[in-house]
Amino acid sequence: MIPANKPRTCSFRLRHTVIVGFDLQRIMEKKAATDVFSQWALKGKDAGMERGHAASVNAMLELALPNVKSDFSAIDLGCGNGWVTRLLTELGASHSEGVDGAIEMIKKARETDDAHKYSHGTLPEWNPGRKFDLVHTMEFLYYLEDPVKMITKIHDEWLEEGGVLIAGVDHYLEHVDSLTWPEYVGVHMTTMSIEEWKNAVESAGFSDVQIHQVAAKEDFPGTLVMMGRVSHQ
Ligand SMILES: C[S@@+](CC[C@H](N)C(=O)[O-])C[C@H]1O[C@@H](n2cnc3c(N)ncnc32)[C@H](O)[C@@H]1O
Image 1 (cartoon, rainbow, N blue to C red):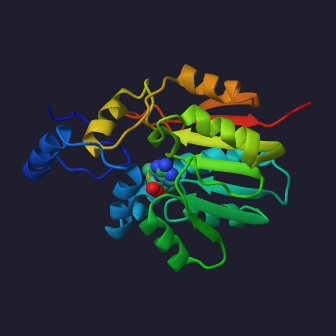
Image 2: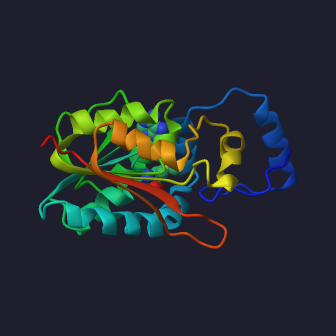
């Protein structure tokens, strides 16, 4: 079956060759997302993601930054070519770094900029070795088999007391067009409803949990944004 709608963040085209490729892909094993995104970096498709995600990330940071201290430290999970890591410094971070499991994304980030730390690491196993005031992540969490485990780890090990998580996903149950993406891209995606994402953030222990849908358009219900704070008081 040919998917009716192409993924918002993916530049797949429904030409004959691609349709044949898609049919073959259905019977093949799923690929590692990090391998797929390494190929994307080599093909220059990271720039399209940066453009495609900019409106959502800007809206996410508008929600998050008023809730962090002025000289905040930050990390971007699944940082791709590092554009949000650099943006966070422009927006006032005293320390900003990124991590991604796609080696070619990290090579590109390091080639673009030697002022920030970009780590090559597979999550959730990789550890930053320090805590942050802000953890940002855009279009990364659902590639994990267990996003709830990652969100809990961010709460328990990555964030300072009072620190903020801001996370955006475009693949979720209510975004019906996105439900073809796992098959289309050929990688695992964990599909959760808005309520399940909210429960995940709350059950991880976050306080003041907010759920938003940002940057919606006529044919797009918006990036689902989860925000929460670490508070042991
Ligand atoms: C859709 S891209 C988003 C990149 C970037 N956040 C942006 O908005 O441009 C998802 C990124 O998550 C990374 N990723 C996926 N699974 C990962 C994992 N298990 N560990 C580390 N990075 C992972 C991919 O390599 C890729 O760069």
